[in-house]
Each structure stands twice: as structure tokens, then as C-alpha cells.
Image (cartoon, rainbow, N blue to C red; front, side):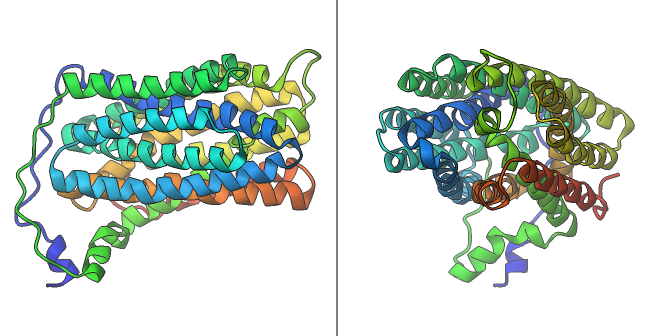
Length: 415
């Protein structure tokens, strides 16, 4: 049996069932808690922990830990998505991933060396990507096509809402790292419990999968990338995320070593100011982008313009490495990234090759989220070390975002 035969559906995929009341709110909570954990740990707690452990080599160590942990996210997300598709259920994977992440956060909080911190963050990335793969699949599972933009906008609010909450918690607990890790882990576990309790699974009826070789399984697993539109959506997302995280992943060190902060303002406190501004702008553009893209039935222009804006604004901290420059950059970057992620998520759900394989294919797409995070820490560390500062890092990150804007052009199925 060929890979093409395996991928051919026996019947047209059924339309998603009408969404249950409160589903969007539950998805907002579930995704917000996830981003609270990612942003709180990645922006504040982990950089602080590593700087305390090895202040002289903090940039290189953070790059190594971030890159290694992202490998786990890249591997576990699509695998968990495929297993979730096969089981026909989402809630066991959501709940199991969140509870395992809580245990991983406890382990991370107790780490006393960079090696153990790296192992802990790898465990958390692996388990949270199990959670993320199942949560991400709920939109194509249960939301009708006509409401994908609005649903994606609501889910997109999770980044600004969750990011702000996570960074605020992390900033307040930077001196008590174990407490910060446990609180963020508990948020994800609590959100998973709510989703599982109030949005019960409707198991899908699937025929037993035919026996195939490992090679055919690999071909099927990555088959979505053979689709023209899905492939370009994947490339655009990967470039945008790579540009964004190359800069954001080092924000604490940028504020410490590159930006002239006002007297008495510590880097962790500065992040607690910048993050609500950026996330507020992100929330605004997320809602406007998602709703207007539905109303006008146009997605590509929103995605392309927002990616281009994200590329252009990175010159601001280079020209003006001041507190004012960072404030302006954070607001404009938030506007750009929020709109991009909201509408691009709608684009992706509209170009999925097969509805019945939504979680698997969204898991493959999430490689474009996690994969660049493997590269970003190593690239950023090398740029800062080799080119002598954070200015070149901003410029290269901006160039990657501009390339991401161009990648939306070849997509054919979406206007």
C-alpha cells in the first residue's frame, strides 16, 4: 500500500460539530495558562536561574539549554498529535501533559546546576507539548469554518493574556524560583482540569489503521508538507517565530547589557513593565485582526503586513538603545506579532490537507513553532558573541520576519 493510498479518505470529512457553550472561554484559559508557563519561565525564571548559576557564561548556557529543550518540544508535539488523532480523544492528553508538566516544574525549581536546570526544562517542554498538541487540535475539531478567524482570535488572546500573567508572576517570584515554577505549573494543571471537566470528549469513530512499514509511516506523518499551501504556511510561521524568539528569548539580558535603563529600574522589573504594554497591544491586534479577517474574508494581507511590521520595528532599539526605544519597540512588536499569530492560525486551519488528521497536521505545523526555538538560542548566542552585541541580533531577527511576510504570497487557497 502506498503513502498516497493511506492518505486518501474513504469519505469526505464531516464538518465540525457546533461548538459547546463556553468552549472558547475554556480554550482561552487552557492556552493562556500554557503561554503563562512558557513566557514566565523563558523570559524571567530560567534566565535568572542560569545567571545566578553561571553569570560569566549566561548567554551561552541559556542558548544551550533553550536549544536542547526545544528539541524535545519539536519531537513530542507532532508525535502526541498523531497519537491523539489515533485515540480519537483530546482530554487525556491535555490532562496528562499538564500534570506531568507540574511535576517537571517542581523538578526544575529544585535544580542547583545548569545541567539539572536543562534537564528539567527539557522535561517541561516535552510534557507541555503533549498538552499543546491536543489543545491546538480542538479548533479544527469543533469550530465551523466560518468562525475560524474569530475562534483563532480568541485563542490568540492567550498569548497576551497568558504572557502578561506569566511574566508578572515570574517577576514577583524571581527571588523565590521554586515558588514561581510551582505557581505556573499549577495554573496549567488547573486549566487542564477545567477543560477536561466541562468540555468532554466526543470520541471519533475510526477504522483500524492498516499495517504499514516505518518508511510509509514517516511519509504519512510528514505528508502535510507535500501540500503546496500548507508548506508555505509552515515556512512563513517558522521564519516569523525564529525572528521573534531570537530577540525575545534574550530580553532579560538585553535590558541588563544593552539598554540604558532609568536609575533604580532593574531588568526583571523592566520586563514587568514592557510585557503588559506589548501584550496589551498584542491583544488589541489579535482581536481586530481575527474579526476583520473574518468580516472581509481576507487573511493574507493581515498576515503579510503584520510580519513586515515586525521586521521593520526591530531597528528601533538599534537606533535608540534607550528605555523609551524599548517601550516603543515593545508596543509595535506586540501589535505585529498578535495580528500575525491570530490570522495565521486561521490560515493554517483553512489549508489543512485533511480534517481527519487535524491534530497530526497541526502537530507538524507546530514544528514551525518549536523548531525555530531550537535554532534561535544557538543563533542568538553566536550573533551576540561573534558580532559584539545585541544590535546585530535585532537586525537579523527583523530580516527573518520580513522573509516570513514574503512566504505568505504563494498561498493559493486563502485570499
